Image 1 (cartoon, rainbow, N blue to C red):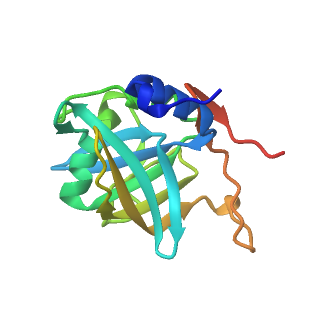
Image 2 (cartoon, rainbow, N blue to C red):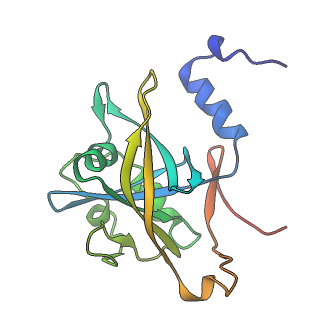
Image 3 (cartoon, helix red, strand yellow):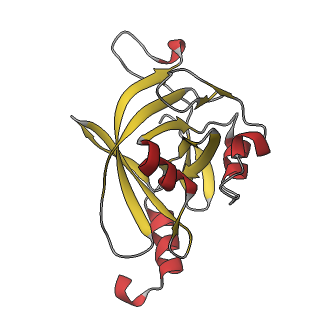
Length: 187
């Protein structure tokens, strides 16, 4: 079967892509604006280069013509902390995907524990085994309601027992596999 994307509506195209490009890690993005912390998960997320250390996150609109809080905050402050979902925090990740008003914080609303690890960046989710401290790099202009944002990784937190002397990382991330969250497992 050949699917012609020009003949498929946006929702069905999203479903097909989400169910095919799997598993995808979850970027649990923490941003801040005027003291209000925002935490939102994004599964359209992937590294694009190690030099410079950059990744891309596709962020949709909150409503017609209004960017999601994560995008608005990144464009304003030029900072974001990307945390990773694991089996211990996946329920909070799901809750934080709920759309709240700009003045509401998912951190407070859903009792998500955070810790300030680096002064110049938003805090990280305490239950995350790894976090990336990023600065805004650029946006990619594409038609539609999604803004791909390129972020440059400046620093990374990793739990001490999850990195070895050869710089290999072992984390228990949960990723998106279509509409489901799945544990990333070794084969």
